[in-house]
Image (cartoon, rainbow, N blue to C red; front, top):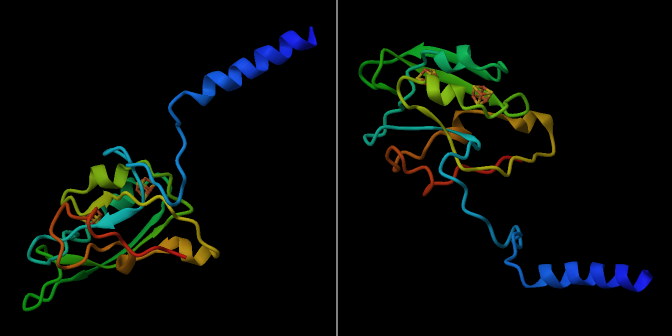
Length: 156
Ligand code: SF4
Ligand code: SF4
């Protein structure tokens, strides 16, 4: 009886030895995320460098976790930050509240906020889990949609 059970056990091991591996040697190797993956948020710019966000706060009002804090300000017509009348002077997301539902991205009329590819969001303090514009804004030299080529700074 014991021998039968042993053979059964080893046969399972043998079968799995020749199957394709489903694990990778993280962090040296990484899988490519699905295009619809919802990771840490990005704030996009237009190709001319202006911020897409016009501070309308639709994203904050639709957020079921109340994770978005936003303060809008009037644009200076001689040196505008965004093409609208207003821009987001303060834009923060509390990553510990966020449930990565993507509602903010769907609600945004300007395609300003998008869910980026970052998923390494561990931090050693709660305060570091509140990200702001400097953590989310796509660099000025990158145009719309280039966020994969320009990784946002890591938190923590
Ligand atoms: S992904 Fe969802 S929970 Fe997170 S900030 Fe956007 S709307 Fe809020
Ligand atoms: S990210 Fe979009 S929805 Fe949110 S304030 Fe800016 S323009 Fe409005």
